[in-house]
Length: 315
Image 1: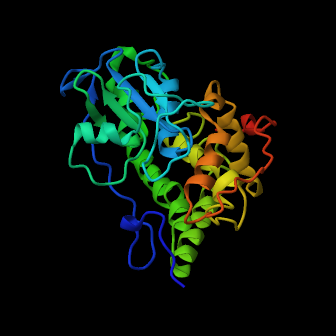
Image 2 (image 1 turned 60 degrees about the horizontal axis):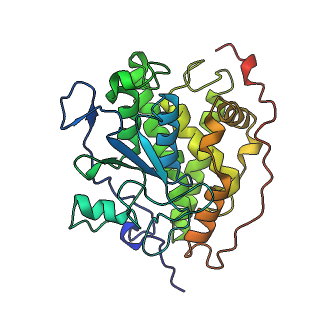
């Protein structure tokens, strides 16, 4: 019996998921050192609230107070063979900037020969009418540093004093948790799935131990790595546990990780960036190679407002 990969061009011969590289990597600069100077109203962010990569840019935009300077449009969480679409619906809408029907139009406007998978987020330059960047890592850093006085100075989610250790931990979280759940979910051979799933839970065990004595990953200051981890944790019990078969344990079964997740979710404004309806409908309806019936589960019932107890940790 043969099995089809959700994204065949990103599947190895061993049945492992190998994510494509981001295609556009230019930068907005506060010092005008790039062709994209920081200017209020010039740039627009296209996102899906279902996507953990895009959600991290939504959080960074909110934390840095850039909601007036950088506009944002949310795509329909249901993605079909034509890709991410702009439609009117609860929590998403049509494109007010270019009147695009599909996000792919932004990619083709920037590179008419583009042939890879169209992804979110996208930072669009309204003046040059092209994509500046489609890497969530770059966009978060730009929101933190590249918009100068347009952005709030605090919080600084990329503090220089921990830069090396921060980069190392972020890479660990990306490889083993953020992308790790996708490696498990998109695996098309048992050995590839087994390896990926075990890697995810080994990493979660390590992070659970780290958070036993620290409120956040680096003590009392929330940094980008925390939001990177949060965007996977908030989706884990609702989607990755069942849909991606990362079902050895739930986040609910990790006392420190669960409290940490609740703590971050309850930070001012963060719950506004989370849409579990978009998340569940996207994964269960869009990934038809994994869930061919497209039935979206009713659960789980998550109480994200219950006390987290993390404020008792002094470091």
